[in-house]
Image 1: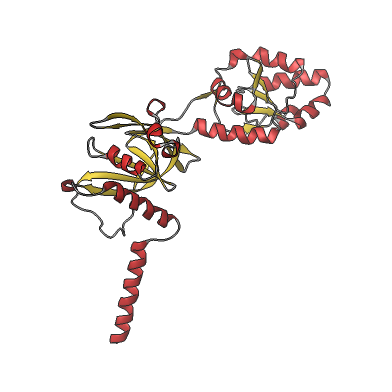
Image 2: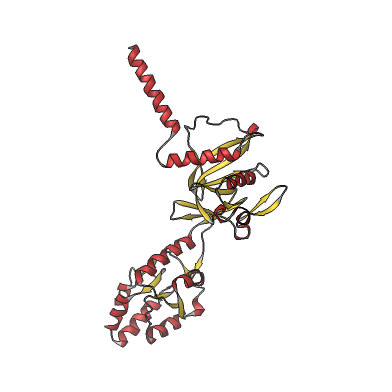
Length: 317
C-alpha cells in the first residue's frame, strides 16, 4: 500500500480548471507538501491566537476573514500576516474572487507561499476541494486480475495466467456488462472503507485475448461496455479443478480477502472444460447483490431446516 504525496502544484493542476483556481503569487512555493487532506479557515489565527493553528492544511480566506481584516489597522494586518506566514502553510486560497491586499501579497511572497483566487463561494470550494484531496491522498496499490461491473457489483476476477480471466470477462461484456480493467487493476482506498478499482491509463478500454490479440472493447461493443472505475464488492478466484480440495458447497462460511487492509467478500470457482465460468461469475455477483440487500439463501435454508427439525422433535415428544 502506497500513500500519495500531494504537493500544491499537483493540487492546483488537478482542480484548477474545475474550480477556476488562479495563482496570484508564490510560484516558487508550488513544491510545498500538503500534509493533511482537509481545509482550514484561519479565523482565530488572524486574531493572533495560533496555539492550535492547523498550519499543515490549505488556508482559505472567505468573506468573514476579509471583513475582519478590514477592521484592523495597517500595522496590525502586517503583524498578523507575518505571524501567519511564519508557519509551514502549504498555500492560501481566497474564495469569492476576493483580492488579497498588498501587505498580504508581500508577506506571502517573502515566505514563498502560493496564493490563489477562486470564484466559488467559500463552503462550495471547501466541500469540493476536500473531496478532491481525499481522492489524491487515497492509499493506492495494484491487483493482478480483471475487473467487470455486473449490475452494479464490482467483481475482481483473479487467477493464474492462462486460466481464462480475460475470456470470462469478455463473455460477461458480450452479455451487456461493463469492463473496468483487464489483467491488472489499480486500486485505491477511499474514505478508509471503499476499495475503488480502475484500469491503468495505457490499457484503458482494451483487452488482450489469447489467439486474437489486443481488442478495443469500447469500439467493438459500444460505450456502455466500459466503465472508468468501480467499487470492488466481490473477488472471484479461478482455480484449476484438481487444485481445489476443500470448498464450502453450501456457502455458509463467508470468506474474504484483504485489499489495502479492507476485507472484501471472496469466492473460489473451480475451473474445468465444459463449465460456463462467465455464467457462474454472473450468478456469484447476483448472489452478492442479494446478500447486500439482506437475503442469504444458505442462512435461510439453514433456518428452515432447524425449524423443521424442532417441529419434528416436538411431535415425537
